[in-house]
Amino acid sequence: MCDIGKFMSVSLEEKERISQDIISETLSRATNPYALFTGTRDSLVSLHLIRQVQNGKIIIPVLHIDTSVEFPEIYQFIEKMRKLWCFSLLRERNEEALRTITIAEDKKLCCFLLKTEALVRAIEKYGINYLFLAKRWEEQGDDPFFSVRGKCTLVNTLSHFSEKDSWDYVKKYNLPYCFLYNRGYKNFVCYHCVPTSLEKGDKMGRDETEDKEVAKKLKALGYL
Image (cartoon, rainbow, N blue to C red; front, side):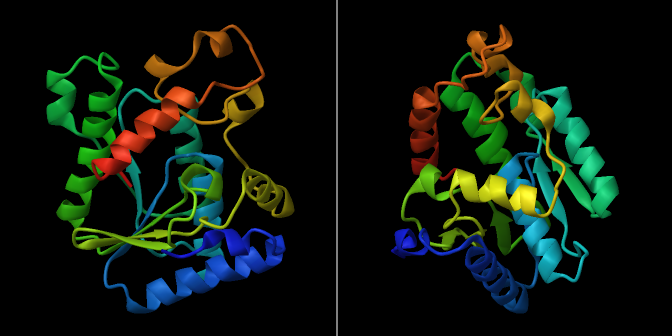
């Protein structure tokens, strides 16, 4: 296991360099790389880093796992960035699961089917052998930059970034971001799972305890 913590004290510029080196190394050996884009700030930073490495263009395909019940603002932002940065976007849904489950009745099962299984199917469908994604240090601890899931290697470009680093990067490059953050959201979830407190205008941010527990269980099942 790689000790990501040792990178936390370096400057943002050095963290950028590390990410770009990881991306360049991956692109040099990958035969069919894709980038995962969820519309979050972190996935935006990851996509911009790829764009920097690819000389201002995003040449590799970009994948969005669509649960079908995300906030309209997320869909609008993803489409906005597709047009602004001119990348090839593929949207994948688990249509079979959508026909058979009740959304959010069992959050663990719902996330697994609409996110994990949909992602696994997309990886198989497109023959993806390297997938870029963005999960910050606080979200996963000392996980390596590279982790293997079956025939696909997941490449985490932000393992050494904190939440502050991510925001500082957005400000440094004046990147547009989904304005749901300005309404108090820290993480984007499907609208069926949003806390009532935020819907009433609470700007303190959501309680992530349950989300972290669900994420832990999903990871054990193979989710990112």
